[in-house]
Length: 94
Image (tube, rainbow, N blue to C red; front, side):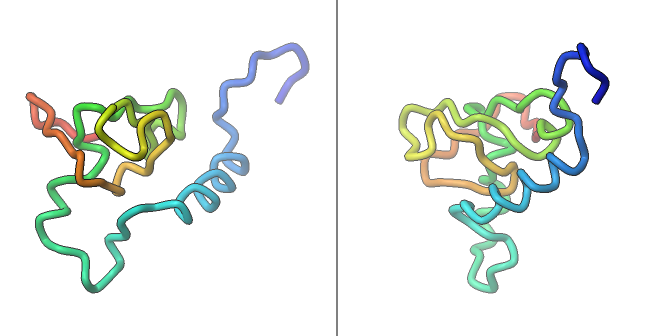
C-alpha cells in the first residue's frame, strides 16, 4: 500500500488470512455430512440482521446485529447460521 493512502482493507493476503482465522469460528459448517437441509435456507448471508462488511471481506462476511443471537456484535461468515435466523423481507442474500 502506498504511504499516505487510507487503508481500504482490500489486500488479498490480509483478507485470505482473515478468512482462514474466521472460518475456524463457524457455528455451522456446510461440509459437515450431518448438516440439515433446512439450514441452507437459514445462513447468515440471508439474515435480516447481517450487515455486510465494506470492501472485499464484505463479499463473505458481515456483522451480526441480532439481539437474540449469541453472535450479536460479531463478524460472521455468510454461510454460517444460528437458531435466531430471521428472513429478509426481500429474500436477498449477501
